[in-house]
Image (tube, rainbow, N blue to C red; front, side, top):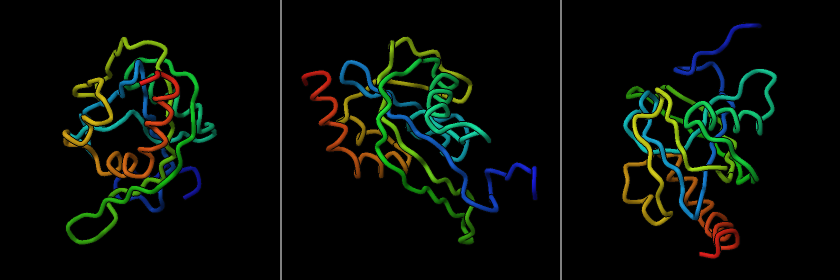
Length: 156
């Protein structure tokens, strides 16, 4: 399969991806996904790392492409996998996601076609929304780190 790009749906192996928790003024940017695998759910900007692309560059590119923002001060939160199975138990989607926290240089969001809706929310408001399983897991694992960073940065 040399040279072939694996399908995102029913891939032959896990796909490397990035996610970026974008913050500004102690608020977090959430986007409602327009397309599968998480259509209609709230999540964070992110996507698949392209061949030859460094992961920090992928994070910056995905934020720029999806919401038109430039970001600074990328902080690695961690990595985990996101596995979605179909009704027969087959792996439909499998991503290994490198998660970052980053500061937006502005709050002037310009959503792409991939984004059905966006909003700036507090970390406490996230649980009130229909969020992706991967965002729920990200918040569960890294909430203390996120809150600590925001308290230090924005004096909240």
